[in-house]
Image (cartoon, rainbow, N blue to C red; front, top):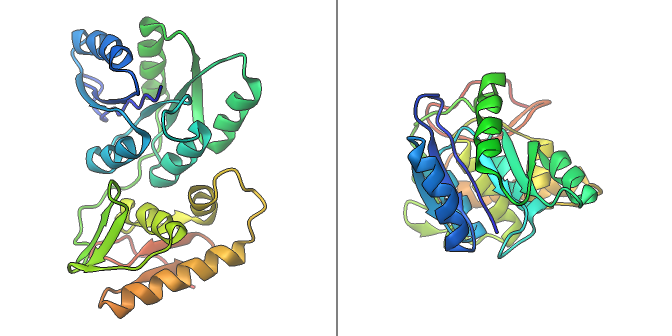
Length: 243
């Protein structure tokens, strides 16, 4: 079961995206959250959840590690690479290695199974009270760049980009930040989840190829921000010193 809860910055009303394999699981939690006055959106597969994440732009996420179509820890890493919002995971607490891996991948808290709705809501509220970083959301023009997470396709001004799976993963993370810088570690986690031994030079090579493909189609391409990471060059992006 995969569950993602996305929460708006307003504590009065929480916008919640729930994604799970079993409709009954979604229904039980959605009903409780709805009764508490929150808005609920649902998805039933990991890739669909990631697409909704891009659409909904959440500020806090709840992610179940028992995914129907992927590895839960890898999804935590992919989500963490796409947003600075905190992630709370649902996991089997007896699986210490899984819990530790999820925390290492970017989760800030863990709740166990079976999910106790009262505890879940309390942990969500506690995370909000503790405060969390924001991603510096911008609404700039993407200069014709469009990334479709569901179809795993990217295009510039309607012209398809021929990307490898790794290149697509990297570009989707960069595009989700809409001009904000994504650090090197987040990019490595997104493209090679569970692979701490990846040579950073491999990341640089992939990004160089992505940049060349974007520029060939008339897009401004990527920018390398010295000592920080990479970003998509788009109107309205945050200024920073480049390498």
